[in-house]
Image (tube, helix red, strand yellow):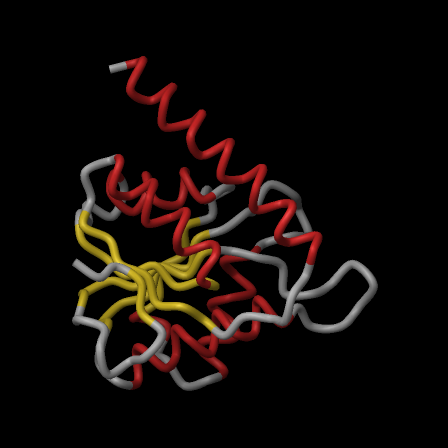
Amino acid sequence: MRKNFDYVNYIPYNTFGVVLGTSKYLHGGGVNAYFKYRIDAAYYLFYHKKIRYIIVSGDNREKNYNEPKMMKKELIKKGIPSCFIYEDCYGINTLQSILRVYKIFHQKRFTIISQKFHNERAIFIGNCLGLDVIGFNAKNLYFDSRIQLREIFARIKALWDIFLIFQLK
């Protein structure tokens, strides 16, 4: 069964879509394209009635840094009413975001919204946890060796995290 989708016409409906966090701004200044494309993808799914509610999940560990608040603000600017957007300020990494959608929002079935490389990892984590998750791929950037290297380590960490979860059961 297909789990990762590029086109809105083919993706099945889920009540909740979960936007995985990233910073709105780059360290050197300017808007982070990963952020912009995830917001665009969430809006697109909502507009096409492929999701009903949006959970914006991300890091909020520092006083002046709040990924969910930034994402919610951008979605509202695009015209999505705030009553359809929930903030998860403790989704400090992909595993925590996925776990919290299940434990806090009581959802076993939902759509993950991020870039394809990130969705692949999030879907793997969700499947290992027994959840029925699919991904909607936000527009990606061209080849970025730093992101690819980071993703290799993130996937190794995901394997380790899943191993630890099952060891604790």
